[in-house]
Image 1 (tube, one colour):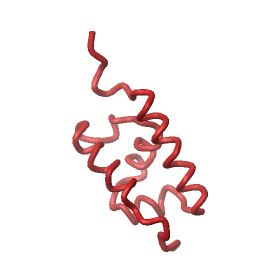
Image 2 (cartoon, one colour):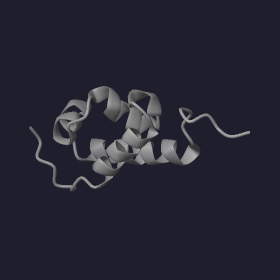
Image 3 (cartoon, helix red, strand yellow):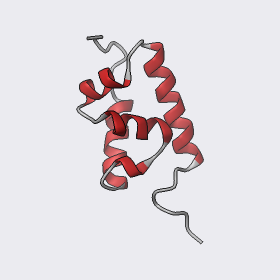
Image 4 (cartoon, one colour):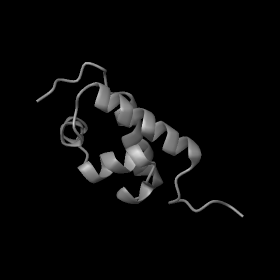
Length: 78
């Protein structure tokens, strides 16, 4: 049987944890990250937990994930 499209995979969870650690290491809140990436805080939380349900579908989730992973390290803190 195939896995449910909304259930996070182990790699999505691991990547989300790494991104949450990176955000925390930069001293950024979810609010700051959401403003920078033009995503809702629910979507930032979804990325960090590997939770697709914060997005319209998996394609939007993957686009947001790409957006966050391509974010330069030197994000301006507001």
